[in-house]
Length: 143
Figure 1 (cartoon, rainbow, N blue to C red):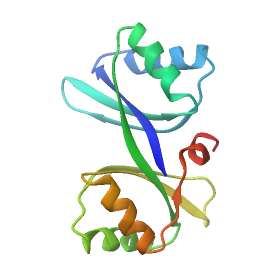
Figure 2: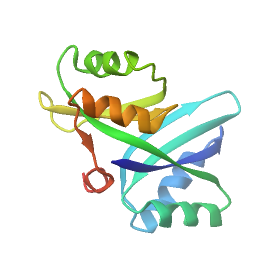
Figure 3: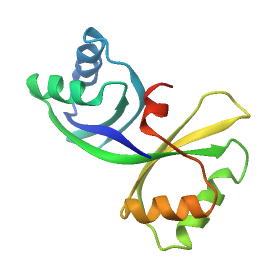
Figure 4: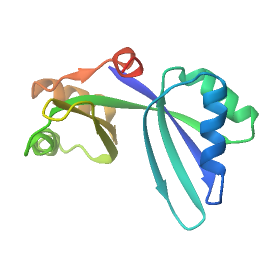
């Protein structure tokens, strides 16, 4: 039920993001989801890829600082209140969302939200109890 994600620390300067995507492209590694957050000095690029471990090693070899974390991916109805229902289930269990990002494959169907929680196992349990579908890593990598 957990999904592997890599986080890459990027200097906030011209061409660094392009360099990461070029390295992945040349290796034939496909980006399935991403999030980019920045500060004045650096950015954090979070990626879910079809070949996580290979990408991590390759980027480290190219001098990037790369970490790997576990997140979960859940299906959320693509309608008003879809996310609120998920967050209400988590709030009721006292679970904190550290960060999240989402994508929709087709409008009107289900969105997929990637979550990082302070207590991952507790969050999985709470979401299952609420009847939320949690995707397996293989499902996300194959999207």
